[in-house]
Amino acid sequence: MHRLPSRPAAALTLGALLFCGLATLGLSACAGPSAAGRTGPAAPPAPPAGLSAEAARETLARFAGALEAGRWPEAWALLSPRWRAATTPERLAADWRGAGPLAREAAARVSALLASGAALDGTPGQGGGAGGGEVLGPLRLPVGPGRAARLVADGGRWSVDALE
Image (cartoon, rainbow, N blue to C red; front, side, top):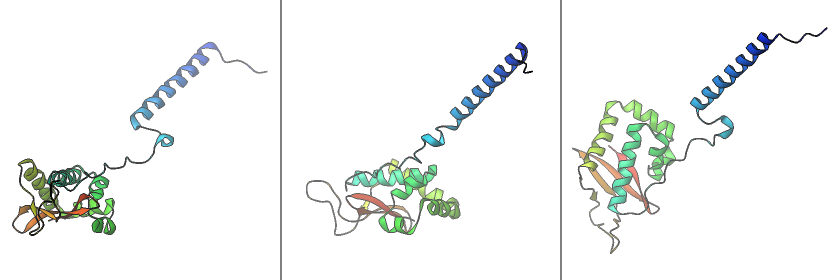
């Protein structure tokens, strides 16, 4: 003969079920979107458009900031085509860690120089474009004796080619 559970047992089961349900809901809320709702990591923002000196400064500032914050896909997306072809965001992260304090100091120096209004140097013989204020040649931000951050034109945008 089949017996129905007594009322206290049913209340205990319902209470346990409710507790487990709330605990699961709380844990999933803390964990973020479910695997079914994920679309992968957010794509990094596009590099600033245009070849103005201001766009170059913004590109370099975003690159240094992404490095300092460990946002490797964003930093990688701001690299020049030759470096994007030769590396990955994961490799960029490994290189950053392997460079030790020198890498952090270089990125911090770039950020500080840009914040202070330091000028970017253009390539001799390739000054600004007519009317639009666009710079045609590579740009450099000297960061120390014999060291510079270098930007190159890449499809109507600036990209970072070196941070020495």
